[in-house]
Length: 219
Image (cartoon, rainbow, N blue to C red; front, side):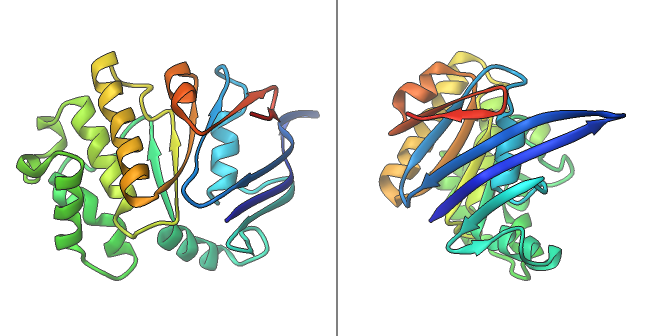
């Protein structure tokens, strides 16, 4: 499903080269929950952005269903990302003027569809049936993150990348989001790749990978 080969990311700071990702190799299969764990600054977010087509690697390849994300045009990559990939971030990035339902619908509207029924079904799935018409300011942190998870699923993605999905939540709300991810995986065979520094997420995953100094070490 997802195949990564010899992936590198190098940034330049003046005359200095900073190696953010060093020679990462990885395969993710359908229905996996893979957790990438490591301290702040280890390269987790950078790696996730590369895997999801949000950043350009310095070298290496990322293949999703045998399509190399970085050998296609920017516009095709953007369309593929909208159709096949979902994202959940530490900060929810909900539009404050839109309701929960409208926020969930947004990626489908970008793709030329308006999936209000699907959005309502997803909000019910994540336990927010009675909060569909609420705006972000009226939602708790845990509720906002569940809206973000529903939004990530609106286009039926093949894979969802989660960047510190519990990093901005207290312990009770973190548990809600963890349970939701595993529920979606169990019931829908949804594939997740999660970057985190939280050991509880790694303990529950089928596969835990450790990143340090931009290098990924096996499970």
